[in-house]
Image (cartoon, rainbow, N blue to C red; front, side, top):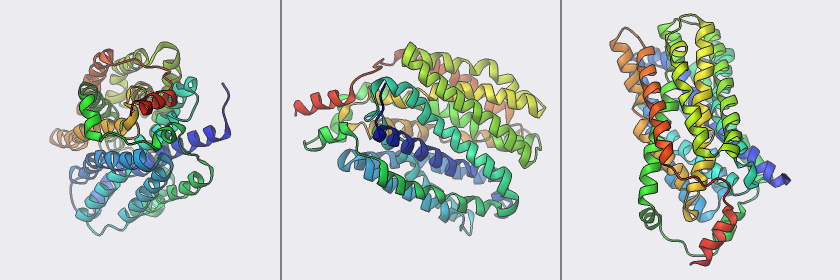
Length: 406
């Protein structure tokens, strides 16, 4: 399998783009308690910032996806990264909760665009046989960002406070310079650049069943990830009363599990198929439930979290390639990101739902987290059986065939 320098650069840029996007998102989950204290409100009220970020992401997937389908993946990716970095910085200047909620909503728009644009650029550029591993690598960017955020929290939070955490989040803007200097445009997009394209609505209308199925599947996937990740630091800090260093260490372990899971099942999907890899990974969550949510000591909690995130991000590791392979060629920068983020929209209630349940039951976060994780693991295993299997399609050739029809 031969790689060109350009293909490597595209992969690095897309991985870092999603890593740093997730880094900026996850900085927030570590500091809910501190923002609530400063603004004299409940943690559940501050958790609406996560809810609003997730709700806004489909808007970003649509806006930036359409821009990428119209003007190219590369320039859109640069604008997108600059936007989410700036909004992260501005969040640190929030004088009150209302301002913070507005800024986190706008951040959600910017965050929602990166995944679809970056994954389309990568999957259309790399060798087809590398897609499974690279899919796992791209999705590993998400726990890599979580891992970076946990390190910043554990090492810097006592010195810079919650506002400083957001200021650190402006650093991803530097990635724009790398993309501009080293990343080429997608060959599949260049193939379709010169011809008139059907509208998004027309293309979706031709693929109604696929679109609805993908949205339902991604709703379950987003409950799987956000249901096991977003409230976990608060669960450790509030229910178990662990300090920043212990929370950081457990977060490091769970994110190593997530990275291992994404890389392993992404690569495995190249051998056994996308559907089978997702099916196996999702069901690993079931034996992980007890140590992950109901252990008492930090060692068992870390072991449970490690196994849980192997399952969650193992299943997720196949998603970038699977959604790109089943996507209509005309809207490949829009479709995967849009269905993913619409799933996010429908799952956005997870944070407030879990935190309100916990507050109403003596800060018991374990039960709502375990209920969500267990249910959606089974739902994903069933849903994926109904998906298409298009492992290894030639996206550039497919784009040429579509272009020839118009």
